[in-house]
Length: 85
Image 1 (tube, helix red, strand yellow):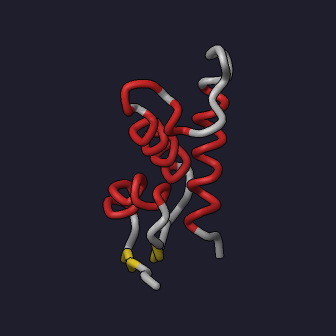
Image 2 (tube, one colour):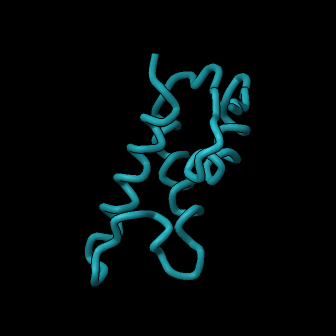
């Protein structure tokens, strides 16, 4: 079983790689100008999930990165469960 956060972290790594030529290089997706960071993260996540056979059920918490990628999970997962403390 793979955690949703593992996919999100892989997407975040890809976004950072895509922007490594920027001066200074970004260390977090929210550093991308004009609020484009969450959209770039979602695009990278969709590409990663396209290579996975089935995403199955997804449990999302309340962290900002999970909130920013919720739209992708809602469109790809069999069932999305929102976890709150």
